[in-house]
Length: 330
Ligand SMILES: Cc1cc2nc3c(=O)[nH]c(=O)nc-3n(C[C@H](O)[C@H](O)[C@H](O)COP(=O)(O)O)c2cc1C
Image (cartoon, rainbow, N blue to C red; front, side, top):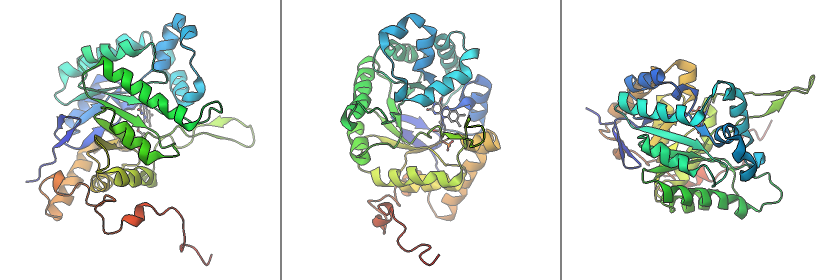
């Protein structure tokens, strides 16, 4: 009998597979399907600061928002704003109905770009009953007026203000742009957050050469997209003061096992469910159990981190970034 329960941010999860924030975690009926399919927790679709700002038009001028901080959010907003009447109360209702109807932890998610104004919403989310809050922060370092330290100070500013306001566990979901990524993740883990998710999938841009129109390629991940988060989970495992959740490119049970071996506490997935349906979570979990039985592991702790940089037989593999030998003769 294998035990696949996991502790994440102080929450007891029955499995390490977490439904990542996406359009699939917007409606109660889908949340129920996730629960039936065995996931350990659900991260609701983010409420975007822009949604709230656009709804409360009068706040806009007060808050001096710079869209360059996170243009991805504006696209989500454009796609979905039409259907949004009152984004915040819809969101709070979703949290409270999810808490009434589900037994697994429900994690709310806010996409924030400033530390001001909207913080009371974090309190409302806590009052609505969310078990935890994930802050979806992605700072594109493209602002020529800000140094890297100034850009990264935004993370710390937002985190400290949120932590002052609420008592439920807070996690951070970040991107991988930083000149000193390892140190940034380590310092963020010392702020009091209970979890860090590595990494959000960036909204890809592309355009055509004939009509010169922007397109949105590769909305969903492919298996090779796992490599960046796999590398950084392995490098950061045992070097942070909070739990690590892996995100991006976990498309099957084998990929989930890899992230646990690298040192992730839990593994989040979205594309897998867009591609194969929500019940596929059960297949992924069955694959995990089969792998554990085949390798004589009875709990996740028995193998978690065995391939982390600290513990693997080949730590240099995680530092290798150049192709020295491959395709030499081609
Ligand atoms: C259609 C779609 C919508 C998403 N919306 C959000 C969101 O609102 N908040 C968020 O933090 N991540 C969002 N994500 C990112 C996912 O949570 C996840 O981090 C990313 O897709 C990488 O994981 P995957 O490879 O399992 O898809 C979205 C992803 C997709 C595909």
